Image 1 (cartoon, rainbow, N blue to C red):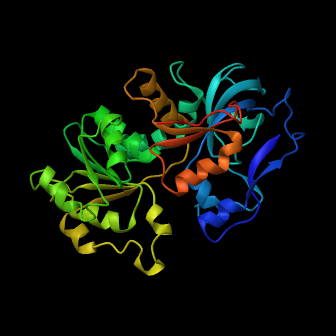
Image 2 (cartoon, rainbow, N blue to C red):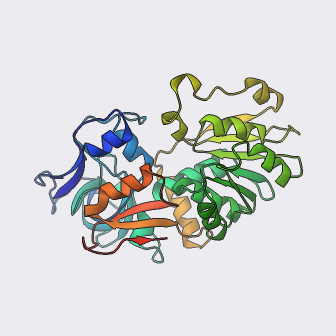
Image 3 (cartoon, one colour):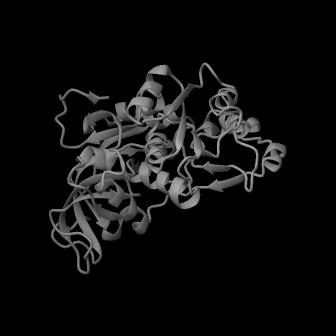
Length: 351
C-alpha cells in the first residue's frame, strides 16, 4: 500500500507540501477478514482534498499531527468487511467516511463504523468524497447555528471554495437571497451559474465590497454573514451588515484562511464599536463529524433538495501533489478530488 505522507513540517505551505512524498506503508495492521468490533474495512475509491491537509503540513491546524503522517481527511469507498456489532452499514455498501489518520492512500483502511455513511445512488464516488466536510459545515452553520430563514439576505465570503459553494447552494435551497464573494469574474460566473447565487462581487475589483452590498440591498445590509476567510474581509463584512431590528445580524465564523496570509500584528482586529452598535451575534461553527447531522444532510441530498457538489478537478493518485498545489495557488472552483481508481495517464477532469 502507498500513502501520500508528510515527512517533516514546513515553515510555509509550499515547504510543507515539498516535504510530502509517496511512501510504502505496511498493511499488516489491517486485518482484512477480521476488523475490530465496531469497525469496518473500506476499499477507498476517492479522497476529497481540503485546506486542513495543507495546514497540517505546517503544524497550524487545530489538531497538530506529528510527522510522518498521511494526508486526506475525507473519502468514499466500498465496505469490504464488517466487525462484530456493526449495524449501520453492510458489506458492499458505498460509503462516505471521515478519517483523521489520513486516507490519501491506496487500497484498504480500517475505520470505526459510526463514521461511515451510505450515500445516495445518484451520487458518484467523486461527489461523495467532496461532500462530508463542506456540506456538514454548511448545514451546521446555516441551519443548526445560524438559523437562516427564507427571504433573508446572506453574504458568503470565499464562495468559490468547496465549503463556500456548499453554503451558496444550501442558502438558495432555504430560500435566501445570496450575495457571493470571489476573487475573479471567471470563478464568480460559475458560482452564479452552478451555485445559483443571486449576486456576485469580485473582491479584487471591490476590496471595499460593503459599499456594493449596500447598493444591492438598497442601503439595508445583510442579515447573515458566512465567513471561512477572516482577516480584512471579515472587517468589511461587518460593515455590510444591517442595523438591528429586534435582533442584530449573525456572523458565522467558519474558518480563518486569511490568518496565514496576514502579519501577526494585523490579524482580525475587529471593530468592537460596530459589533456593539449593530448588536451582532458572532457564532463560531465547528466542523466535527456528528452522525445525526451527517444523516440529516444526506437525507436532504437524497430528496434532491441539495444540488450535487461542484468539483473543479479529479486527478489520479499519482497527481496528489498537483491537487494540493491547485488549492495552494487558488486555481480551482469547488473541490479537488483524488480518484484512486483512475489510471495514472488519464487526462485531468475539470470544471
